[in-house]
Image (cartoon, rainbow, N blue to C red; front, side):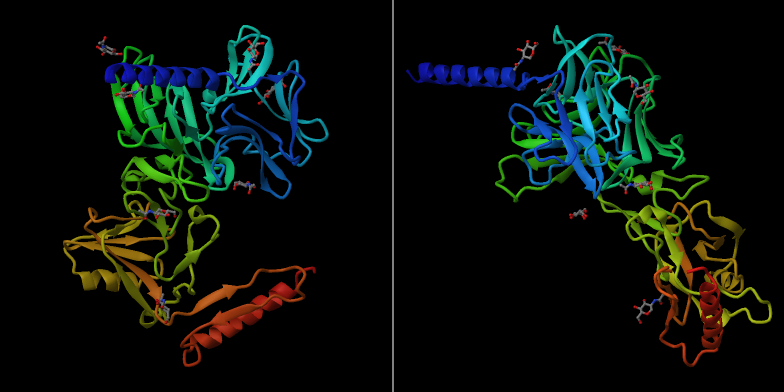
Length: 477
Ligand SMILES: *[C@@H]1O[C@H](CO)[C@@H](O)[C@H](O)[C@H]1NC(C)=O
Ligand SMILES: *[C@@H]1O[C@H](CO)[C@@H](O)[C@H](O)[C@H]1NC(C)=O
Ligand SMILES: *[C@@H]1O[C@H](CO)[C@@H](O)[C@H](O)[C@H]1NC(C)=O
Ligand SMILES: *[C@@H]1O[C@H](CO)[C@@H](O)[C@H](O)[C@H]1NC(C)=O
Ligand SMILES: *[C@@H]1O[C@H](CO)[C@@H](O)[C@H](O)[C@H]1NC(C)=O
Ligand SMILES: *[C@@H]1O[C@H](CO)[C@@H](O)[C@H](O)[C@H]1NC(C)=O
Ligand SMILES: *[C@@H]1O[C@H](CO)[C@@H](O)[C@H](O)[C@H]1NC(C)=O
């Protein structure tokens, strides 16, 4: 009796599952001649269960991104995009037509993007599938183009990347143009993370790789939430993420090469009620990015004059004492010193005006310009203090390294075991140059200083400020 009941429950469960998966593979068809207009309400196509949608997302006032996003969560997180390099103005249109089958054109009819078919064929219709794959299909339902084969920075459960394939990090969390990091499944089988010669789109340094060569490799994000690199006979070469805790049934999942060069597997509870859920990080690769990115030319994992920290989830680009953002909206642009540089005048070296801030376990490898052995810490600091070119010194076991600006490849990590001393101006004078605004008839140099009045540099600053505003006022208004 009990068994029979169980059987029938199992049966109906299986049936429900089967019909579910059958339906989820056939969303409503998008027929030839159908289009979406950027800026019009409801300018998207949702998948059958509405988990995903394809359409326009407004990124800036007159800039739209043709994208696929999670459609049932308030964040509407974007998982794929076509034109991050070149946003579409309002009124742009994406249309399924005859050749070119699927294109995005601006209001003047100029093409912004098109889908180039991966197989020769005649497109009959398109569909936004519940797997998050947007597909162009032939009459025989053969997939002629799929967003799964043209990933941007994200992969999703059910997605398979075959050799060769790549993910390109976006520039900033809210800027979808190509950024500074890439993740490639190469022709040779190697799966590699790269920094690039940004803004040139060539790879520079590989900071993580599987180093297994071969053919027939694929990167698979399966429904159990595993992300693995496999050979075609099923041998696992590398496990990027193994999610045994959170099912794809109950959790939305995505894996992204984030703008900061870290590949993160994220999960989001599906039934958390509106507004309660959020993305959390399930796993990260590589886990020690700050230590791995050491570029002979370039700033490293963070911008110049910065240092990288990693707390197990978040990579952060920190600002040394005495320095400040070059661009607060883009930490990768690095930091600038916010005090007046030391005088190189041999008669007034200003050694009494500078001091050091001690930073344990911090290093800027490859920024050295001098190295001394068998010296004391005091000697090392003194040597930097009398050298106007010296930005920082490192000291360990009688060894002293002088570092020059811009400081590069900065990192702070318990494994470093080197003490850094960064040189800063003692009086804490900070110069804030207001935006040079052409509407203002004169721009000002504001000098903030705690001990300026008693100091001789006050006069210097006033002189400097005065001559700068003279200079500015000479500019055409
Ligand atoms: C979509 O079109 C294909 C080919 O014409 C057809 O086989 C399929 O049943 C259609 N699906 C839906 C949901 O209309
Ligand atoms: C599609 O775009 C590519 C550039 O991305 C261009 O070279 C090609 O000519 C376009 N194809 C059509 C049919 O417009
Ligand atoms: C995104 O960043 C790139 C590179 O700095 C820049 O050229 C572009 O204007 C930015 N796009 C947006 C929408 O801010
Ligand atoms: C996903 O991959 C893992 C590791 O290969 C495997 O143990 C698991 O059975 C796979 N799950 C599915 C649904 O294929
Ligand atoms: C699978 O392929 C790899 C190389 O691609 C090979 O080393 C391994 O022996 C193969 N395993 C099986 C079970 O065939
Ligand atoms: C990582 O950063 C996110 C967003 O900035 C924050 O919500 C989260 O708490 C941070 N995680 C850790 C472990 O610090
Ligand atoms: C400057 O002064 C402020 C407040 O007195 C202090 O918090 C800050 O650490 C000082 N900065 C430097 C570079 O000494």
